[in-house]
Amino acid sequence: MLESENNLQSKHKEVVCPAISKLAGDGTIVSLQAVIAYLEDYIVQSSDPNATINAIQGSWTKRIIACGKLLNVSIEKRNVNWKSIASRLQHLAGNNIVNDTASSIVSSDVSTTTTSSSCTVLKHLLTELDKNAIKQMFDQLDKSKCWILESTRQLAVDQQCELESVEQKMRRFALSCEYAHPCHSLILDLCDQHWQDVFKSEELEELFAFGKPILRSQPKELDDLLDQLEKLTSASDAYKFVQRLDYDVEKEQLKAWLATTLMSTARLFIHSKNKNVLDLMETDKLYLLWGFINSVFWDSPVQAISKEKGSMANADARNRKRLLSAMKQTPNAKQGHKMDTIYLAGDNELGCLEISGTNDTSKAMKDGQIKMPIVMKDMLLRIAKTTNARLIDIRILGYNISGNRITLTVLDAPHGDVVRFRRMNELMCPSSVNDFVQCMIPLLELAMLGRSIVEETLHAIDHAPRRHLTFQNPTDTSVLPPCFIPTSPSISSSSSSSSSKKQKQSA
Image 1 (cartoon, rainbow, N blue to C red):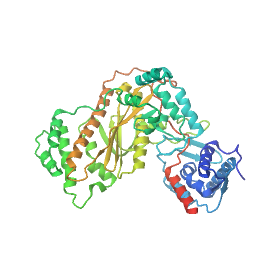
Image 2 (cartoon, rainbow, N blue to C red):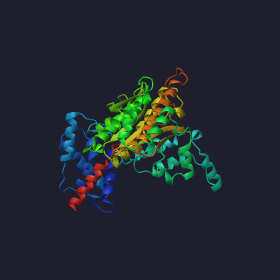
Image 3 (cartoon, helix red, strand yellow):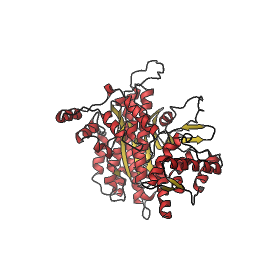
Image 4 (cartoon, rainbow, N blue to C red):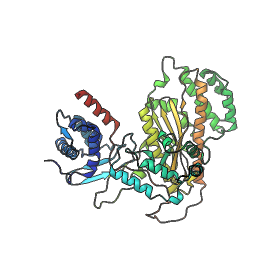
């Protein structure tokens, strides 16, 4: 018997109906298999892994057909295969694995418990509940604190138009989105091409340049060494040059780091012969090829903690709505998103690094434009809540490594409720003994810059005025709004591609 419209759970309807509409297009028939393939991740994450596959298959078939009926779309039930979903549910039941990049919803006929996570996938369709929550968040912003650019003031005078704050412009774009986007967390990624249609070029320039500059001069003794290195032509020359350097390893730590970095990295290329250094596996690349990015912190009060450590700040953010059991039972606590490296000083997370062994553009986009900005904002918010450091003095560092490329990113809160995300032009690692020197010099400067950024933030934390005793205020809005948390799991690109492949095969 089909579920009636009243009995169909709204949280499922808001995901299933858009999926059917998208697959149907202008048609009136969709195969059940295509819908199942498209929603595979959602079905797995929304089902009790301990339930029988027959029960899950029956309930989801009813839901999909009921949604099809609401849309006047016929659901064709030929050649339906549940093996992939059954296998994944069996794996979940046996290992009790929690999906780290999506929500976990446990459903049954008796009760439903829903928990959500930060959105860190490329395709996360927004529900009506999501859109209402986003609108409410923007509507609750204090307009007196919003950021109005000087260039916007001038444009308003020249064009005789209404003056809009940065937050208002972001709101207009945010409410037009059908999929989750960093702007829903008030994150303004200035390299995101969407903003070209929202801000004028003068406004984008001001948004980028506002506040203290990111670049700064390096210690003179290191600048002199880099000037000498620039005259060399090969990895062998660089190796021999730093081998002859005279320095005190205890007192001249940065010089020792530079020397050991150049020798160990040059050796990879000098002795590679029949091996391609760029073909190293992800972990090997982090420790062998890109190790100097983290080893620059060896003598620093900041530690580079690798091996996919979960972010404490992100865990706090993901569990902020966790309540005592009342109308619903208390959901399980979530772990923070795991990063390949987290830069840590005491309990303060000052930055992170993500690496992909190959030039995977989809992973680079997911890590660099979605996952990292959200985790980095959570880090900034945690510092702002637990220390007395001024918001404008907190800068969070990020590195995104994709194959043989690296990008340094910086997240800060320059004004109002906006969190700004800036990235430097990507740099390439050496590919041979011949381009070793010209590639390594800017990479060494990049590593030293990253260290300077996090140490300046740590200095701001350590030298902030002492904190006074206060009570927790449930209506306190002194800190920035938290990151947006969707109400439903994601529909991943893998599900979409799987669906399209199966549709082509059946055509």
